[in-house]
Length: 167
Image 1 (cartoon, rainbow, N blue to C red):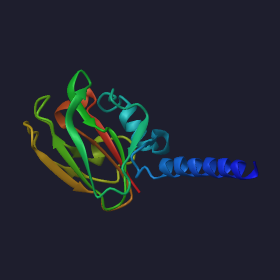
Image 2: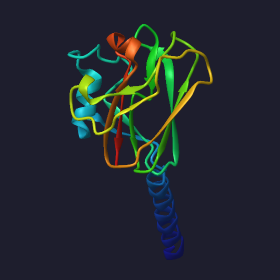
Image 3: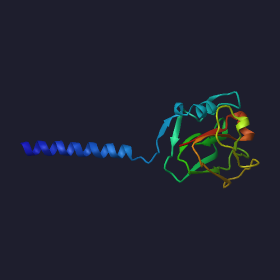
């Protein structure tokens, strides 16, 4: 009797340990709260500069530990194809973010200009003039801790905004 009880306990401990390890070993693919990054949260929800983006639900997509992360440019939302997906992203220092055009929603660009955003943006970058078509790409390496607040210039008034927190 004692042996079977001990085996049952050990089996239960083994299952609990496996479940716990699986929950922790997600590789940074879950979400974290946008309230942990107030400048980014404000940028995505405020209407002082452009519209709020309807694709942001208050969660930040965690991709820490990834070498390269892709953000879709022209995903569906904001009344058409006027969304960055994901709109809010958390990455590690040194991660390369590849902005990849979907080919939908008219020409887009990616602009991070401190003068055009409220909040504290620690990055400035630009993909240049708005371009259309699937397969257009722009990469930005996130080389230091901080927050990048960006938008699509032609569609800022529709809420086409994004943010990247870099740790």
